[in-house]
Amino acid sequence: MKVTGTELKIADFSGDVLVVGTYEDGLSPPADQLDTLIGGSITRLMESGDITGKPNEVTSILAPSGFATLRVYVIGLGKKEDLSIRRAYEAAATATVALSAKKVEKVGFFLDDFWPTEVIEQAIAGSVVGSHGQDIYRKEKKQTPPGEIVWSSATQENLEKGIALGNAINLTRSLVNRCANDIYPATFAEEAAVVAENHDLNIEVWDKAKLTEENCGSLLAVARASVREPRLVILRYNGGKEGEPPIALVGKGVTFDSGGLSLKPSDSMITMKGDMAGAATVLGAIKAIASWKLPVNVVALCGLVENMVSGDSYKLGDVLTARSGKTIEVLNTDAEGRLVLADVLNVALDEKPSAIVDLATLTGACVVALGTDTAGLMTNEPDWCYEIQQAALATGEKMWELPMYPEFGEQVKSQIADIKNVGDGRWGGAITAAKFLEEFVDDTPWTHIDIAGPSFAEKPKSYCSGGATGFAVRTLLELVRRQTP
Figure 1 (cartoon, one colour):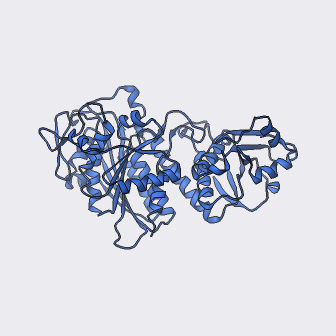
Figure 2: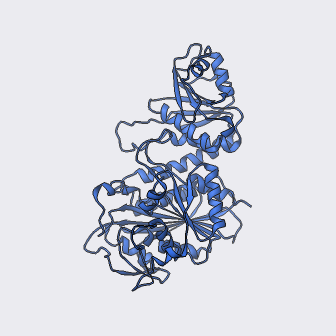
Figure 3: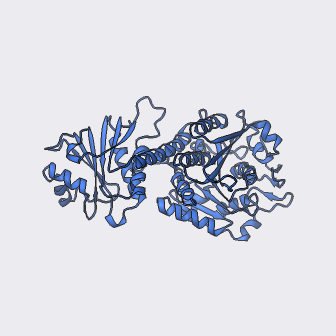
């Protein structure tokens, strides 16, 4: 799929499909120009209430009189005063999801003439994301990307950044959507190697032997029952000054989670190919950061395992020794993500980062607390968490901070080891999991993002076909962009 720009006026556009935007409080200039060309059809539809301009409302006009294009899509942008990068991203993605239901050779986006740079870049990214669905294994696709998307009022820099961001989000989505016999620790590491080669990143891959040498006993215990050997992938982007401490992005990469001996029921296991969304998000984010050439040093670490069942499974009651030297009593083998992250966070400390963000589909408790569209934030440093919140607010990705009171930490203390891998019962499970992780970051500013809810959409949304969403790639890019000197 090509994505290009044009300086043509809307009257001179030639293609299969045209997309224009309209606000609740009036037509955008391109929509107004088109309305004149097609005899006032858009105005009449607004007067009748068939077009309202509400966010992500799509109205198709077929074979409009007086215009060569066969199909016109009018996409709602909400109130003009409320225009944001989230609105632009979702509107463009919504329009592309709609039009990609049929084969299209060329589509023109004329949403508005006067959008700021950051808004048009996000809209371009949305059009790239909306073109691809989760039907990657279907012989007959439900979605077919257009042959070419043409953007009005976009500079070459807008196009390059928007395309790069869209491709990074789609990388994350593809990794999460691909099944566990396709994406497992070794093949994920191979995908990371491709990203490293294409974006001049330094890459280090630890195999089982190296993980053993490094005393990663917590991660290795989770991986022990699988025939798929674990990996730890470390990617370094050196965009900042030499010697400047990097920002560390850490991702949970459980490429399939059966629950281990604490076996999940079938219904709960179906989507567990996506339990590596944290690692996939981190990989997508560093791809975007490198593509944008941000002048900041970043290191991404992905802990990759399968949590399976065999005669060599780690057991309830086992005591593990993590890389940090802390001992961990295992009381639930389905609380495995935190065991993986315990060692990966400790490796991250070796990079001497200025701050750490970890992302994980860690707990169902966070989904119970915040629903399926909102990620939970937990931190040891409120100022660092606030920066992440502001980045999320700018992109429109929903995140909410949960309290990290010391009492929650008491729940993960063990009678026979330093700590245990679950709290006392069901209550506050997302927070007790975070308190466990806090044991492995020392005094480094750190925020944990539980993306169990928003990383995967069980049902399609207007701007996403369902499946993996690529949630938090945009927030991490924005967070790092804001660290620019």
